[in-house]
Length: 195
Image 1 (cartoon, rainbow, N blue to C red):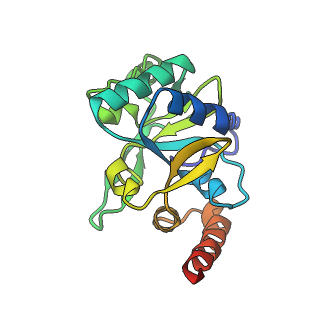
Image 2 (tube, helix red, strand yellow):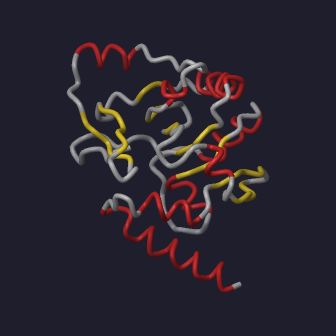
C-alpha cells in the first residue's frame, strides 16, 4: 500500500505473534510478505502492518474472513483511496482516486467476500494492529509458496516470502523507505548463497 501522509496519524503496529497465532489456529494458508517478512529474515525493521498473501480458495478465504471478524478488522479510514493496475511491463502501480461519498460509505460497511478474493485486498485496522491482505500484488500464494521458507516464530511454523521475492517487490518500484531494507536483504542473500 502507499505510504500514509506525515500529517495523518500513524496506524497501530501489528502484534505479529498474536496475529500469526490466530491465523495458524484457524488453519489459514498464507505467506507472510512485506516488512514482517523482512524482519523475520533478520532485517532490523519495525513493521507498520502484517502483510499476508492468502491462498485464494473459498474455504481458505472463509477461514481468513472469520479471523478478520474475530479481531474486529475494518478498512483503515486514513488509507488513501485507489486501486492497483498492472502496467505494460507487468509491474503493479497504485492509482489513487478521489474519496467520493460512495467510496467512504463502502469502506465503512466493508465485509470481505470469500467468493471474491479482491474484496480482501485492503489495509485493515484491528484490535491487534494493522493487517494488509495482499492477494496478488506481490505474487499469488502459489507463486510465493514455490520459493517461500518455513521459519519458526514464537513456536509457530510460518511460511515467509523468500529473500529473492522480497527484493523483487522492494525494488520495483523503489520507495525511499525501502533503501536500507534492500541493502540488508542483499547482504542476507549474499550470505545464504555463499553457504
